[in-house]
Length: 248
Image 1 (cartoon, one colour):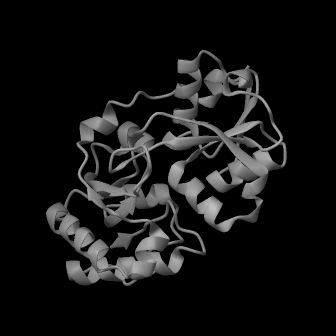
Image 2: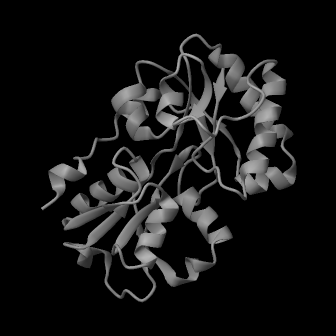
């Protein structure tokens, strides 16, 4: 069996995530000894051996919805969002004096084209505001998108609010960046499992594990609880065009 919690897994959170998984495993009564950090996450999501993983809303609605069970969504207690929802901050260099509407023809740094928070949210926000980015720079991760703006490889990036919270908490360079806006909230990262897994038992184990976390680990992970958001709420979010279809 395979378990992973990859989306906010970094050196400062890894120990807390490992202890969280051990609590889930103990409550469930079975599961792999440790979280998988080696297998590509797309392979984890589609594996018949999947017990638990965290995906993104965009690949869930485009590729995974018919092949996995939706377990729930973590509530990170983000200000201005309902439990289980999130949004992205629009981040620029601290020395950049432009307003958000002045970034038409600018370069957007994005983590991946299948990211709701890094790609879809940014494109939908720009379309709603009546402007379009002129070019795009793929970075592979939210922290790399922040660094791309910092190093002037891009003008702006959309970084999901929990990733930005961790960047603010752990990266000294954050003082050289600024937030100039944020996107509309959408359902946050779906937790998924394979079709054969007892989903209710897994939900109960996760909720109990969150309650059993130490205060320090709960604060490190910013976990408030497990929220049940209907699958249709993820599916109702519109899909963005691909970077290739927008490149000029």
